[in-house]
Amino acid sequence: MLRRQLTAFTELKLRPVLTDVLLVANAFVWYYVVFSLFLQETILKIPGADIFSAIMIWGLHFGGLIISAVAGTFVSKKIEHRQLIILWMALGTLSSLALVSVNPSDIGQVSLIGLLLGASLGFGMPACIGRYADSIPV
Image (cartoon, rainbow, N blue to C red; front, side, top):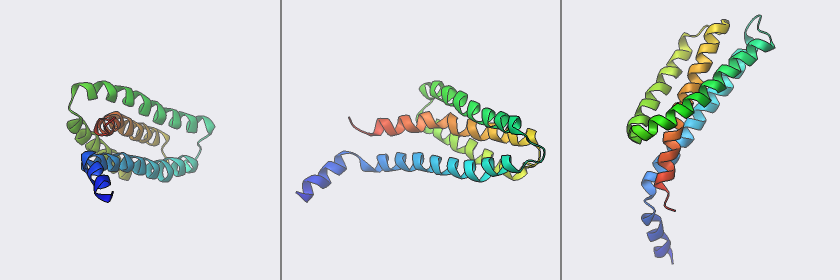
């Protein structure tokens, strides 16, 4: 019985599935950390910012996420998933490093960083989810 279950797991090619699960989980953990530590805390502490400034920053962030996800979908059809995921990881690294140089009291810089962080998540997520979907046998 146990041997039959282990054989079923090896037939699923568990290693690529685990790699893809780790990629997706890592993306969501990174996004949660950026979302909660940077965007929520920074937007609340901008001096002189009103509700319209906060809506503008959130709108740029989620707008960049949505537009880059659509663009990432089209790009993932033309580029190999592996190359796109490497590009996505590089973009995520650069956008994370950009957090060091941002002035948290400047609305313009926070808006651009919010846009960059949203775009960096949205760009590669379709390829990552597509790779995960391809690795699961139906």
